[in-house]
Length: 162
Image 1 (tube, rainbow, N blue to C red):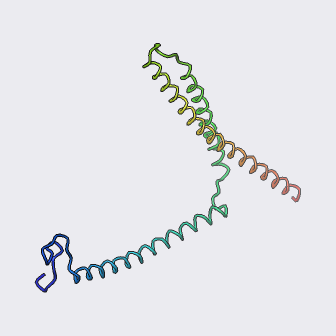
Image 2: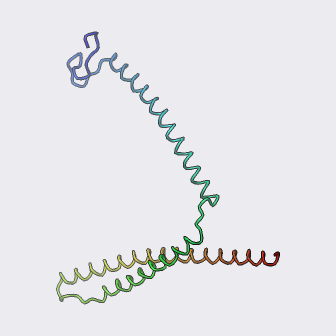
């Protein structure tokens, strides 16, 4: 700092926060250089992300994901079991609303309303999960059925030719 540069912690004129014009120009140049370097790196990162996203989107659009029928046969009963358990849980959740209010006083009334509200939220959540699980189980069942139908058609076609 002995070559005429001012320290950023000790302003040249003694005013707090003052930066002389030369120091400000130096800082502006450094900020610009840093910004350009960051932009260059940022552009590179975003280009890489865009390329990765394009690959994923192309795979999804082109049906790049395949599940073999054996895996579907193993998963389908598990998803059906999940859907069935969630259905049972919904029935149990509905029973919470049948519980009586503990007493006929304002606190018990508030407690019963809170418990009923909680039971409603719980069963609504379970219903959403059950619908999803049942839908997935059904999709797997349909996919297995289509595969088996196609396999039978292929086998029949080979027998006719053979």
